[in-house]
Length: 272
Image 1 (cartoon, helix red, strand yellow):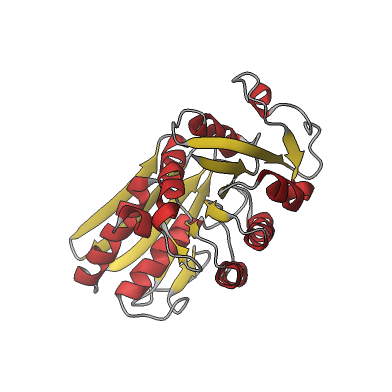
Image 2: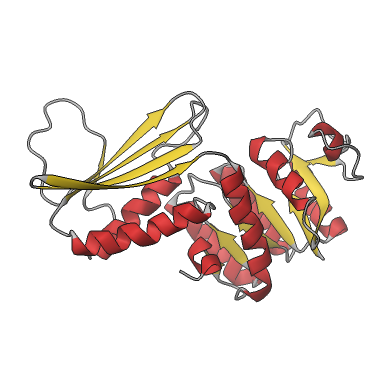
């Protein structure tokens, strides 16, 4: 039985993750963490998310270390925000608890700190800007296409709901990194975040990234390869947050065979 702790327990993703954990025969929810100032502290998380009493109270995120030491979960699942996730991973690593992180908006500095914490404490970790299985196939495909259409103009367009805090999305940035690597370019050399004003003719080799925010869009990502007289568009659309949860469940199970002290991603989980 895999014992799991979930942060952001009463949020959009936390709620879905907990509901899916409860459906698994080989998983057990042992801890639920809310925001630091949550008014729900002490309430049963099952009752809060509408599945009935399950005997797991919501604790404040400030008590993370205390809860992890008491409940001793095998895995912490975190879908929060960059600075919060960085702190949670550090605490989890120090407590010897493995992590599955689907948080987006992590900076290079935050990722560096995360890798150091994972390496130092020899925990197992799966960290991905997009846990959806289809999105990771999308990553695989665009890298291969970029190598073939290396002289085409390439643009990345992403769209998300109006509440998303970071832009461009972590998935769009990952797509950019994959394309830049496929083309043998240094990261950030050709990154153009949108365009405004008299920008002039498109510079050969530049890769534009454009962010759209509105309504309840779960997550759309398009990579456009434009040549003379034709174009190819590779698109991934998330219709529901369930796609991220399904991937997270696979990541949790993958940890049993993941290497210790190494940050893995969903490509490792899926063997692609």
